[in-house]
Image 1 (cartoon, helix red, strand yellow):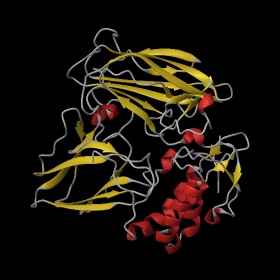
Image 2: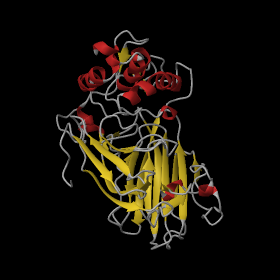
Image 3: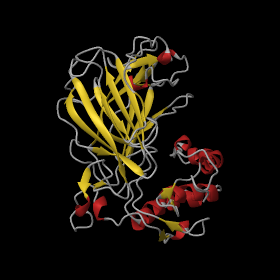
Amino acid sequence: HPGSYPPNSLCVWMIRVPPPSLVQIHVSHLAVEGPSPCLFDWLEVQEQTEFVCLTCRFCGNVAPPTLNTNSSTVWVTFHSDGTIAGTGFTAQYRAVRPGHKSCSREEFMCDGGRCLLPVSVCDGRQNCHDQTDEANCSHKHKECGGQMTGPHGYLSSPNHPKPYPHQQLCVWYISVEEGHVITLSFRNFSLETQDVCDFDYVEVHDSDDRGAGRVLGRFCGTTVPTDLTSSGPHMTVVFVADEGVADSGFNATYRAVSVLDSDQFACRTGECLPQQWLCDGWNDCADGADEHSSSSCEFIEVEMCQGLSYNLTSFPNIWLSIADQREAATLLQQYRVKVLMELACFNPLQRLVCGMFLPQCSPQGGVLQPCRSVCSLAEQQCSQALDLLSFSWPFNCHLLPDSQDPMECSLP
């Protein structure tokens, strides 16, 4: 760091402070291959305590809030696989006395020591057991955000081009017709300049839920972001401002683009490229996605995943950023050797993992994620066995479709 981390790394730090002091960790930078559930590269914090750490594994490009642990001894683990690498992370720790837990200036504290990022405060969802994150929200500006469903639209920070008010949380949920994707174009952009976008920022999510899907980008400062394109008919745009410096803000437009008629191609990073650059022999996307064939069904060739309820899949796998079956087979081999074959619950876990790594190719086009019930069954039967192997349950089942409809999700 700040160069790219090497492949196949396993780094473990044991942090120990004199009892009864507790360990506090602040991750100031994070750029680790994602997205959630962090199957390939991750930063993980484990405590030596009876308390259960519910959100101890991190990846992606958004640093987590301050971690106030309940232990004097903490293990921090960084793991990378053999493929995509980022610049990694930087973190600081210190000893704090019980009862003196704290959060960073821009963060919100609840539950006696849990820190939340500003985007999670007054967002309409209870993130804290004491519910204080949704209390006293009347000061939030009410004239921003909302549902947007037309084929095109306009959004801007409050008062733009005048300075935006302090203490803002604006969330726009954009949905267009099926068979279309969303292209978001920023026009003016001027937010508080920061080394890390923690105070005032715009964050764009590739889904209709900030807790699901990948983050297309988080932006601050005065550089106008490039056009961003969703992978489906939903996009969420979040604007956050703290109580400090205010600038003139931003405005942006969006438009629905037919998947069939689009004159542009979206890289998995959200960057838009001309269609004529597809399959031209040059890797114009950072991950080379423009040189992979477009999503068409292909027979499953990975031996471990043959014999499922379906035999057709499609690549690239946009959820896990897997380019082709050969890469999927390499990753699955690691899982089989290290975990799957050792467990009595091999069958349900195999169906879930294969459904994620080699998703079912839908006759209507695209691919289907496994149904949530597939994940829940595997977690119920396997999580305890994985714990014994010191391997945390890697999936967030709530991110999968809660349905049994074979048109919406698959039952491998």
